[in-house]
Length: 246
Ligand code: 13P
Image (cartoon, rainbow, N blue to C red; front, side, top):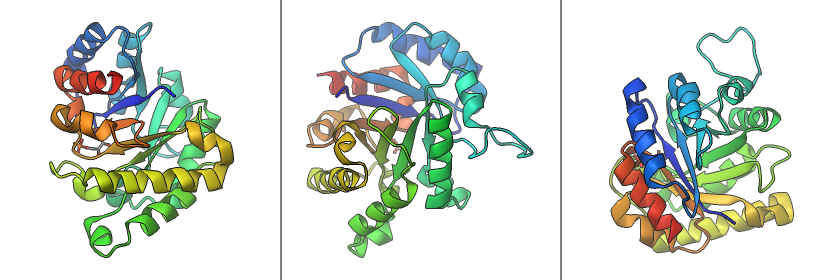
């Protein structure tokens, strides 16, 4: 399977940020992995048009479960697709925390993504308290069970394991801890969707940066990364792309 370097810009970026995208495309015309940037919704259309014809894919950061309707402020999966997106992140821990998103809602969003022809990047991960209580596998297992869209395949699903306490903190689990969770998730996926599970990209996310990317990518069952802060600059994200392509 081709590995995936995915960047989540979160609530960062304005029209001027297109220069970072152009630099990334110029530096990695034929990367050895898939490259995805998920800018804020305001930039999806512009960035998709800049990326057209290149190896870079553009995604959204969230979508509503419905395709259209009276939902002020929301963006639907067909709208993202229409704007040129190929992927959408659903269930990021910041949305679960800031907007009270449940597994059931995340699943509905992921199903909306699939229905619109987008790849769903489903995020799961334990809090620090849950890890300290020894509940990591129980938590991520039940999040996976509850958030997985019906009809998931290797082609339309990516799962991102992002420990909440590792996001934006500079802290990461040990390599053995990442290996334990990814192995567990692969097996759980196998139980849920059978042989397709082998081809589903399992991303690690949480304080991935150029200096730790190579060692994280060497962990078995890690098929790429979902990168926050270090995806905002082409040089940093490019270094992560290079580590994944090696
Ligand atoms: P950081 O890479 O900034 O820790 O963020 C990770 C993340 O939340 C990506 O979705």
